[in-house]
Structures are given as structure tokens and as C-alpha cells.
Length: 136
Ligand SMILES: [Cu+2]
Image (tube, rainbow, N blue to C red; front, top):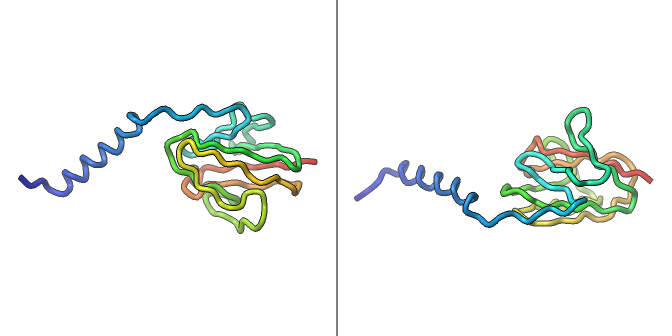
């Protein structure tokens, strides 16, 4: 018996939607680690982090600090310097290399050695933005 291709495709889509529900639970995110939702960074439990007036998370750190991210979602994220999903030249800053994070992956940046305000984005999710403010 032959099934139309659309029937097979629809069954695969339904199966793919059901798989995350059957997957093992995600690792818990420790305090101080920046998490990742579907289209945003999770800053709950992160010291010196708040939502800016534009709704973008602002994370304040001191020069020489590192940031640690954990993908506590089932989405893939590719994070790096930039805004609205558009990466800027990563240069040799704290966020190089660009980093792809699959679920439960953890990534720590290099030390942030330059004071100022820096934008982070995700190439997969243009609404996933944050600002890092590096103070003395
Ligand atoms: Cu993302």
C-alpha cells in the first residue's frame, strides 16, 4: 500500500513535535548562569541583571569577568556580538568564537577586558538580544 508523500511528511512533523516531550529533562541552570528560552535570554538568578526599558536584558559585569551561558531550552542558539540576529565582526573580543549551543550545552566567554556596552544576539532568533555593560 502506498501513502501520498504529504501523509508521510505530516506524520514525521507530528512525530518531531512529540519527541521533545519524551526527551529527558533539561539540566537545571545554576544561579549566575544566563539561560536561553525560545527567543530570549533568561536572567533570573543572574546577579546584576535586569530588563532594560526596551525589554532587552542588561547584564552588568566588572572588567575581567566572564559570562557563562547554558542552553536550558530545546532550541539551538548561535550567539555572538550583534543586534537583531545580525552579527557584527566578532574581532577578538570576549564573545569569540561565535558559539552554537544545543540543549544543555554550557559556554563561558573569555574575560571581558574592555569597558563599555556590548550587544549580544542570536542568529537563529533575531528577537533574542541582550546588552553587556562592562564596568571597572
Ligand atoms: Cu537563539
